[in-house]
Structures are given as C-alpha cells and as structure tokens.
Length: 139
Image (cartoon, rainbow, N blue to C red; front, side, top):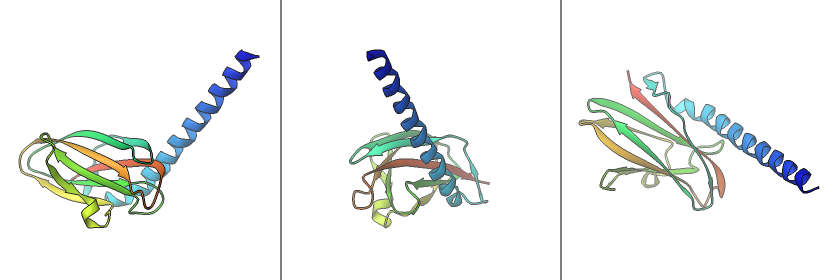
C-alpha cells in the first residue's frame, strides 16, 4: 500500500512539473514578440517558477560593442514581472520597476561585463508564475 501511495505521489508531482514547464513554454512564446526582427535571440532559456516573494537570478556575460534587448515576461499580459540588472559589485544598472514594469530594455554595452538579472513577480499582480527572460542582440 505504501509503495502505491509513493508511486501515485510521484506521478502527481511529475504531472504538475510538466504542466508548470508547459506554462513557461507558453509564456516564452508570448514574450518572443518583444525580441523583434532587429534582434537575434541568444538561444538560451532563462526560466524559473516563482512563488510569492521568491527571486530568480540569471548570470550573463554581455560582450562589448553589442546592443542587447532583455525581455522579461510572466503571465499572459505585460507588467507582471519586475527585473533588475546588476553588475559584479551588485550596483543596480537598471530596473523596470522604475518604468511601470516595462517588458523589455535595450542596452548598449561598451565593454564586456558580467551581470546578474534578478526577476521577481510584482506582488500586486501575481503571487505565483513562471518568470521568462529572453535575450537578443542587435543584428
């Protein structure tokens, strides 16, 4: 009996995880509209399932002489996800919170730098969901 309960619990867990990642795929497809034809996607997947006040961190290297677009989405409408970009010393370079949670930001990188992008749900708009970041560089 115990083995049956464990098997059922595992099956439910796998089904829930599959549904959550399917949700992330849907959000990523919707978010792609922010990476316009002028940008080439970097091909990486930046996704995290968030609840309440959790924060996802994504580490990136941005190369000098390049213009990047960072697109961030959660849910089916824009403005649910707050993202902030920090340098190695944790100095804030940008936060969309200062711009009504805009879904993307274009940045010109003069010199190569390592950054951390933090993503969190706007507590006034969502209490759980999938955070998706897409990065593109200008052609």
